[in-house]
Image (cartoon, rainbow, N blue to C red; front, side):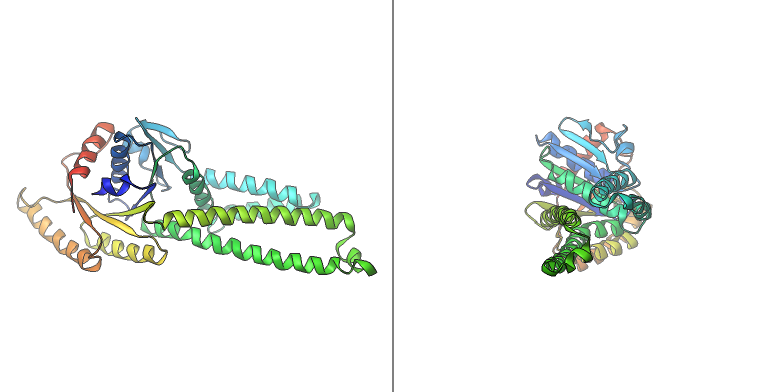
Length: 330
C-alpha cells in the first residue's frame, strides 16, 4: 500500500517522531520505486542526518548515487544558510549605495543566527530540489514532528510575508510617484536628491520587486505542490507506543491545518504475538495504543511493519525491507 501511495506521485513526505524509523521507511520506498524504473531522489531535511549511516556510504549536500535509479541528498542547513545569505548579500550590495555596504554586512551577520533563517534557507533549497526535473519522484525524509509541521507550513507563511513586502513596496512606489509629481516647483529634487538619484532608486525598487515576485511565485508553487493530493503524499511513521501515538495525532492535526493530507500511517517495529510471553504481552499493550490512533484517525490507512531480528543497514537489507513493505497491506 505504501509503495502504491508513492507510485503515482511526484513527492512522498515521510514524517513522524524521532527514532521510529523514518529514514529506513523513506529509503525502502524510494528504492522500491527506483527498482520499478522511476528516477528517484531521497532527500534528508533532518539536521541530524541518518541517510549516509543507513546506506553505509558518504551522503552530503550534493546529490550522490545510492543505487541504480536512486540518488540521495542530505541538506546541510548551515551551508544552505551561508549560500542563501551570500546570494542575498550580492543582491543587496548591488541595490544599495556603496557607502552602505558595511551596514549590509552587519545586517547579514545578525540575520545568520536569527530565528527562522535556517528554516527559510532550507525551504529555498527544497524548492530548488523539487523544481528540478531530473527525478520522477522525490522522497523527503524529514526531521522529527515539530520541525516537519513547521516546514510544511512555511510555504504559506513565506508567501504571506513576501506578499506583505510587495504591498509595502507598492505604497512606497506610490509615495515616490507623488514626490516626483512635485518636480515642477523643484520640491521633489530637494527631497530625493535630483534626477540621477531618482533613477538609481527606481532601478533598485524595480529589482527588489522582481526578487520578491520571483520568491512569491516559488513559494506559491511549493505550497500548491505540497497540498495537492494528486502530486504529493504524506506518510507518518510511528511506534506502537503512547508518546509516538499522541504525537502522530497532533502532527496529523497540524498538517490538516496547513492543507496537507496524510495518506498513510506506518507502524514500524510491531512486536509479534507468537514469540514468547514477553513479546506477546508487549504486542497486547501495543494494540491498546494503536486502538487510540485508530479511533482518532479512522479514515487514514494504517500499515504495520514487524519487528525484525536484525538492523536494516545497507542496500541488501533495504531491498529485503522494501519487499516486506510492498507485501504489507492495511
